[in-house]
Amino acid sequence: MTDTALFTYCMRLADDSAILSQRLGEWCGHASHLEEDIALTNIALDLIGHARELYTYAGQIEGKGRDEDALCFHRVEREFNNLLLVEQPNDDFAYAIMRQFLFSAFMLPFWEAMMSSKDEQLAGLAAKAEKEATYHLRHSAEWVIRLGDGTEESHNRINNALEFLWMYTGEMFECDEVVSSLVAEEVAIDPMSIKHLWDETVNTVLVRANLERPTESWMQTGGRKGEHSEHLGHILSPMQYLQRSFPQAQW
Amino acid sequence: MYTQALNNPAVEAGVEDEEKLAAFQARIDREEKIEPNDWMPAAYRKTLVRQISQHAHSEVVGMLPEGNWVTRAPSLKRKAILLAKIQDEGGHGLYLYSAAETLGVSREELVDQLLSGKAKYSSIFNYPTLNWADVGAVGWLVDGAAIMNQIPLCRCSFGPYSRAMIRICKEESFHQRQGYDLLVAMMKGTAEQQEMVQDAVNRLWWPALMMFGPSDKDSKHSADSMKWKIKRFTNDELRQKFVDATVPQAKVLGISLPDPDLKLNEETGHWEHGEPDWDEFYNTIKGNGICNKQRMKDRIKAHEDGAWVREAAQAYAAKQAAKKSAA
Image 1: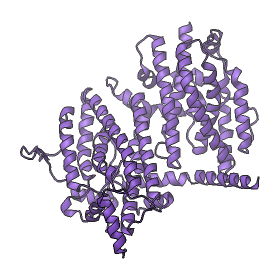
Image 2: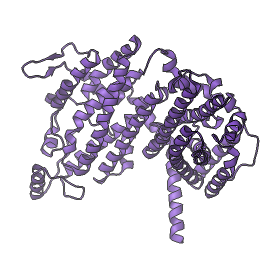
Image 3: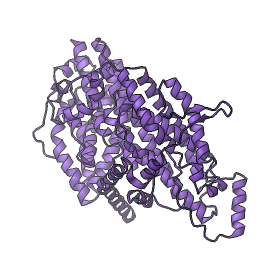
Image 4: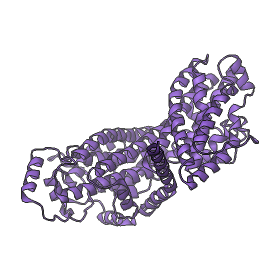
């Protein structure tokens, strides 16, 4: 049972990274200025790195010979277990930045805590990912502040993004049997144990950005069970097209 | 990537102080680097601004045809390689805009020149990337051609440009190897993959040869650039070097090159090749290539969509500065 739980846990984290990197990659060549183009794709690259390690590890745990690409490119929407937050579209730069900020504000304390996981592979990845998440959070938080405290237009845009994306933040703190069984073995962490850190980061940054934290409202859920927004299928279609069209090919 | 000899109109020479000119030329002849604060003839400055900015624009526009495949890369490893490569191109754009800025022109002015259609960029990026092998072929052929053009630029007389080129060339040669590696992997694969590679090379071979600019007999403006050691080889010399280096690589890859006139001259040791379709080249330069308008539309859209972001950053910086001075 532990192996099944660990496999699922790794796949969730891998899917978060893979889907968010795919979204960030959409900016390549299209960002507001060169420096930001490079920054967004740099975050995408870090996340692809995490996805590769996690899929590979998940494949080893599963023991059915599936490698990183088999797991990323040969599963359908309902088999993806990423957070709904990371699949939300790049409606504008404000959405991309707010999505990154809300996610990285969670991932930084998450990886910090995971550095003491009893699972050596995950602890090792956490040590590397923590450094990267520090940069992702700093970068996105600085932009949230700049946009919030910039012009009237930028304030409105980042505020719209915050209000829309807020309903997807509850999912990060969910703790089902998969997580709780691994928490008991000190392999995973209880996400609620870092909620206060996430709150602190979010509150501090929103204040500096002249943004009001949305009141607690209905939180969407489903990603961890493969119940997604309509966007996911459109992310997977281009992403998987070559692997699906030529299943025998090696690239 | 990269520079192209585009047959730009000659820069007006103007009247320069003869003594200063002679001293300047003597420095160039001694292979000294000219630095931004040194005296230089206006025509030298203008030629460099034009060449460096065209090069920068090419890097930035060149992100688009490769970016076309980012979301469709067929493996996580290939996606990471492609993203990193495009990121490098963006970085090259940044170094080059900075090098141009040392000559007294701002990045904003240069970007405006690109978006208004006043400035040129390499013709190669007006061709589409139609299958995944194009990503490899761009690395192998386009970056390969760029390297041939750019290695001599590492010795360019203008210090900031030559130093930027040293860094850029290191990355470009890495890109070329990655592109070749992608193609090798596909050639080891299925018949469909091999067809993709051949198709990509068939489409990109001639446009890659055109990257060196018009034939020497039609290239009018390299005399000053040669004298000033901005340019050290003619278009045809560089094209020949590229063909000589690339034909054996094509053989190793196991593909054919779409030139029936290609043959080894045993005496000279050079591969003789056919003439590129220069009408197509000039037509593309004029703006009628298959992707010219699309590329500009995409750049303009990114720039306009990003206007509010840049304005916000400036407004925020101004507020912070005001707070600081009030404190």
